[in-house]
Image (cartoon, rainbow, N blue to C red; front, side):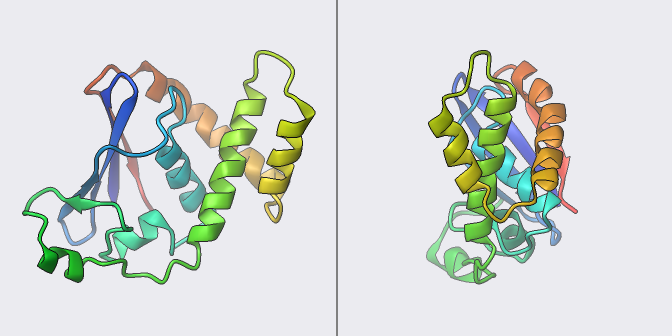
Length: 164
């Protein structure tokens, strides 16, 4: 599945996916804009790295809408919504959210330009409970590779990634 993250405004972005069956779905606006690592970009990296097949992007691959995506090539109707309702039971969604919070926080800590308050470190450690620290570091390394590309995008620019 091809996933495109598009900067749609100064502090806005959208996510478009071309699903394996060929149709396109889009979430616009997407939540959690960040100048370097937007929330759903972190979700993508986390779910791909940990092979979470029942999170946001696994739902899209399975033909679902992850509760937030809408069709690009046809009108959004009740029939479409029924046909594309979440196709997975979401067992990985809680893990995806927790790992995403931990990864985004770890990225922020790695790139902090001033000392990080102890409470933030404690919260990050708690959010990352159950995540292998080496695996979390690997995710942050991937984000380090993507963040400059995202940050450099002008409004209207896109970053295209492959879900595997």
